[in-house]
Each structure stands twice: as structure tokens, then as C-alpha cells.
Image (cartoon, rainbow, N blue to C red; front, side, top):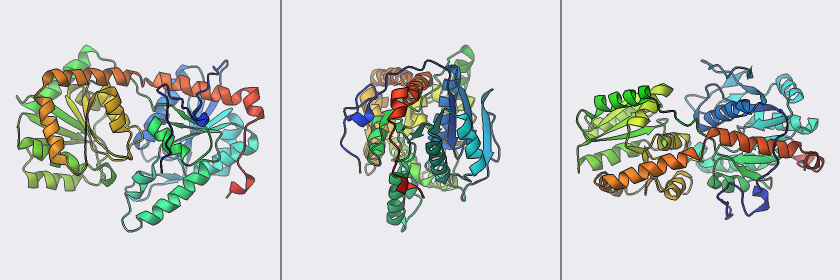
Length: 425
């Protein structure tokens, strides 16, 4: 599915569709974000949207958002108005679908100078159709993979994949351009559309280390290691598409070689009980602990205390969780997968190791070798921290600002291509 296009290191690309605009914003802009789940929302899309909104606010722009209703909504930053729509979240799935209410969309479009849509849903289509009629430029974030969606299905997977591919191909014709978090994601996005695709990191709120955070991390490490030497961590949703069961198989193979480590798994999801049963079967109660969902501060303390971060997910367009671990100085052990950007990021940063899905014993041997070489481990940890700093969310805000300004430039607005009218549903 992926097109073989080379993406340049600065986020541009040799293909003209990936041109990086150089136009700088010269005035305050009114930017509207549309996403079915937001504040708090699930996953990387919501985290990226919320971070980008904060970065744009810091640069002096006005921001509003249109999102689905949440059972326990979180408050947006001061000055951001969120309009809520009725929404449905099927079962325990991560995906939420908001009702595309025409009046709410029209109000947002009337106010906005630029619209950014971040979820590929019916709400996105209606919003994109509305801004096209109003001649308001639209940007679409690329945050969803077919593979991560179809993993929820078994026998219906081929059919669901065909339907999703057709939907994405149809939907991604509508915006003026797309933004994707990594070169890998940009190549994937370009396989659906001829629209320009720009690389803009999902962004990180870089950690501020203070004496209090260091003390909390030291206390956490002391509680869980109990005299042992190495702390391994994973943060993520405990669901089938993330392959968390691999964590236990790697831990079991590593425990057969050494017992001076602990693996802490943070996150909630439908596989929590199966994981606990598997831990008991493998006799790993003293080696592996499940922390459940942890608040943001505790999550950052966990990463600060850890030596290695394990990422077994096979479908990641970037992985904010991995970047957060890198920002806290964790070396990374990641699954090598053709549908994930993580291993490429780890390899290019020189901050960890990648393993094959069908050889978890070898993965454990690689981890064991790394733990036996503390000088190499420290080097990988330093590389991780240095790479993560390049993903400062404020830099992502600056890149988005440039893209919006280029779309608002008179010459660009005059020649902005519109999709064929026949693409309307």
C-alpha cells in the first residue's frame, strides 16, 4: 500500500506534494479543530490535538473546537470554547462517533479562518463539505491506520479493510492538505490522496525536571525494585491491537536469564484480566506488576524512574507514549513492523533495539545483552532524550502556523483546488 517516496529529514519531501511551506504567519488567526473525541479523548489523536491547540494558543491564535460528548469531560485551556455533539462509543472500543449536527458545524465554519479536522469520520466529511462551500481552507490530520482498525475484526477483516480503504480514499480528497506525524505516516497518507502531505510531529510537552519530580521517581523506583537493579516500563492501552501479551513472553524469557529487573505495565483495557492470568501461568507475579490507569504526574514519574521502555504495538504512526519515554531518558525496545513508525524512529535516533514478532526469545536475549552493557545503555538513553527534544510541541505549533498562513495567502487561496463535486455523499 505504501508509496515509495523519500521524505526529507526536515519534514519536507522530494515529491512536490510534501513541499514544506515557508510562509510565516503575520497576524492572529482563528483556528477551529474538529475531532470526534477530545478533552479527554483516547489515544494519540486526542493527545496531539490538545497539544497543538496549546501550542497555537501560546503563539497568540484564537482556537475553538467541535467534539463529541464525553462522560467525564476535561476542561480545555482558558480561552478555548468546545462545542459538544451527541456521540456514541461502540462497546469498549476506542473509536467514538459524533453526530454531525449541521447547525454546530455551520457556526464553527462561520467563525473560523482555518479548519483542522483530525478524525476520519462522518463528522469530518460534513465539516469539510461545509468549509468548501464557505471557501475556508481545511487541513486534515492523519492519525488513523487501516491496520489498527481491522485488528478488531476476525473473519470480516478483509471486507472491513476494503471499506476503510475506500472511505479514506474518498475522504482525504476533500481538505486542501494533510499533516502526518512522521515520514512513515506521510507516505501512507499519500497513498490515499494527491493532496499535499506535510510532516508535523504530534509533539511533546517536554518534561521539566525539578527536585520534586526526581525525588518522586527515586521513591517509585525504590518501592518497585526492592533492591533489584533495572526497571522496565510500558504505558499503553491493554487491547488486542497493541499486542501487550508480548510483554509477558519477553519478561518470561528474560526472567529465565536474570531476576534483577521489574516490568511495570501501566494502562487499562479489555486484556487486563487475560494478562493477569497469563502472568500467573508464567510465574511472573514477582517480576511483572500492573499499575492500571495512572494520572499524568505518576506516569511521568514512572518513565523518569525507568531504564527501558517496551513498545510491542505493530501499528503506530508515531507513538506519543514512546516519545514521552524517550524524553525521560528511557532507551526503547520496539517491535519491528511494516505498519509502525516506531522502529524507524528508534533506529535513526540510535536510542534502542528492535525485535521480530516471531522471535520473542531473541528479543529477551537482546535486552539481556543491553542490561549487561551499562555504558551502551547510558548512550542509548542520552540519544533518546536528545531525539525527543526535537519533538517539542511548540515547534509543531510553529509548523502548523506556517501551513495555515500559506493557505490563507492570497495567491494560494485564489488557486486552491477543490474536489470534484461528484465526491459529495
